[in-house]
Image (cartoon, rainbow, N blue to C red; front, side):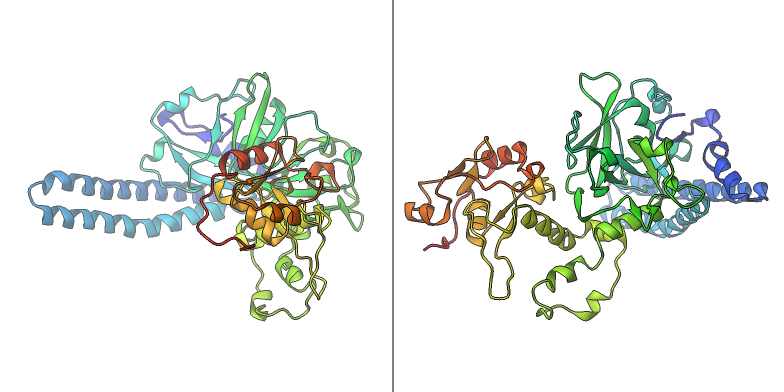
Length: 464
């Protein structure tokens, strides 16, 4: 079976029920299997009929080019009719898709039904054994996409994972960019493409436990390393937890798979695995502890119990976990807290630790590579800077050399007295307390090559 899931090709249909549903039915102790299988069959037949209807609607729209070739008004009417048919047909189609997902979800199988349409026979070139050398594995732009050829589609199982990582790892892990893993975990990693993972530090490596989340974009063979693969992280998805989540809570593991029959931690087996499947409930619980839904409120009231503009109705609204992980405002708050804490609330270029009358630090968190330019929310893509130096950094008036220490200044644009007043006398960057939080060389290189000295000034400088 191909690691992405079951593949249907005319008379070569594989047994979806046995592979995907059977083990879960047995585990649940469901008695009337034939009735359930008939329900599943009905859903897939309904899907095929609706796909055929959509195909006809699209065909009508295409034929209108010939039917009304010399009559533009007629052609427009035909196209509008075809498009409206697609819209009308999409409503029952969406209902069937929802019914399919609901049915399979009852047996703990998360699927992206009919996720990709492929040309007939093209999938024969795919590897159906993880012992071969699989190529690039990725997802289309949309997680659930319609299919105009139901017999040439596949079902892809999707899962969330826990990925083990050591701070001093010998592998090419850059957690906001790429995760290195061996062949043994290929199937599990490909199943997680397009879904979220949680990073975890093993006991022997340190005390952190669960410490960050990210989303896997694709999986590729590692160049020049037989038997190893790289999971590419979706740009902008990585986010460190506001506080590390312990391995045990009240003496019980946070992962159901690591819990013994007595409720305590299990030993051996999955505990030592570098890649573990993570149920939805466990994922939500871990993320909820590491990135609480009221994080914005906590930051807003950290130094002012009654801040202006904070609406009570917004505070009591509980957002879903995934929405929390993808909402820009929430991510900005989480990023800012981690970066400022990493530098001890001091500006990395001036070295000053300024606070206002209420005790709030004046230092800001600056992205070295902007999020809109595929920069991440990792601490290693951030600098703690004062407001003025943040403004200068974003406009390419200052940067950091490849030694990650020397402060570079565009001296033809910045007066000497401003340099003397704002920059540390040593001319070197203040380093974060944890060496693992040092700016990544690639992020600094990107800033030097794409921002430093290249921004055209169209506004007044703060010192003017």
